[in-house]
Length: 373
Image (cartoon, rainbow, N blue to C red; front, side):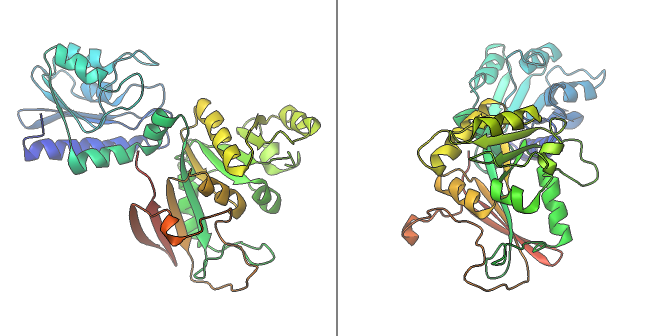
């Protein structure tokens, strides 16, 4: 049954808004928000705040206190779970509370759900409505990482870069510090705190000796650091290795990597995975499948250009965020943000589904969604 009132849409919008409060704390679980209403009065709200903690539905029911929920409506941004995981099924709690109607903004595409929770509620006499159109799309967009991982087993990939007005990310000597404004860099650090892993290539690791941590106030989650390093050249003295295993580090190597080098990295606290394939895009696929199997649902790809090009050639960039700085470098040998093979014709280019622009201090942030899951 479609949504029938303006109030339905407003309460569902609020549930979607609440879901975003869990960003950076619940992965690999989805972001979920819930609102409980009876006779036009909001009795309780909640969201999934941390992995392993109560789900949004449970928080919302608890927020209602001693209120009688018989016949109340629960608005939830994602269909309620019906399986036993780290917490009991939310469908059981909904039924026990006596809630008479559930309005869900989007489906859960994972094997354990896929409409089962809503079916259980219907079978038990609960009225169930599911949103369509723009509200459903907004709810799906909140959980792109969860949805891609559920459907493909691979992580969702956000490519971030900073470039000059002439589209360069480094001078011909490799200097890139700093193209973007301090405010832009702080924004990127906050993005790190919302993903499972930050990914760079060995060229970036050797040139910059980065930490790849989220260094802004209020961050409670540090991402796994991942380096694509075909022949295991990452120095044991690097900041990345020095911080392992306290800060998780994965080095992605090829079969050409010397055993002595990979064993040394493992002894130093790094995880090493071997990506197979005849070319770099194939090895990107292999690595993402292994990272996804390990529970990585969202990746921030920070380059450099060589690795970013391999991800693009593999068809594994889902969203792009580019900081455009008011600088001009020039020079035919200056670095472009994306290398790799690319396409031969403009007609073969990957076209963005959405395009948004935002001013960040002196920079312009251009965001483009390439795929929706």
